[in-house]
Amino acid sequence: MSGSVNPTGEMSNAQLFQQVALLRWLNSQTEEDRRILAAVTGVQVGRELLNRITGQDKVDAYKRDCVLSIAQFLRQNPRASQAQINAEVEKNVLLFAARVKALETAPIL
Image (tube, rainbow, N blue to C red; front, side, top):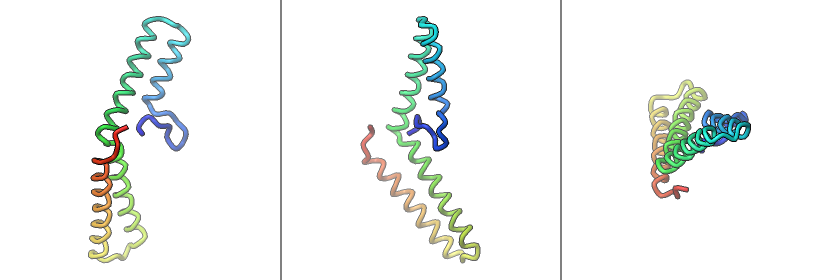
């Protein structure tokens, strides 16, 4: 999920902007700061909905996993033959494709 706290415990940029807007509004209670908070929150919600509908965050993660898995194989098998490398690449690309295909039937929310 794009709005999640990352593994180091830091907020995403979108979460930070929302928290800044919330803090401003809590301190001022002005209509202008309420509108800013509503706009920032609306953008964050819209972005999250788009990511869930398109699955782009997951596709990006699957792609990253695919590349990292191939790189790990190459590091662990520096003397692998071209046939072994081709087989490993094919295996990982097929896994990537299957994971992306599975997104088509996954529930949106």
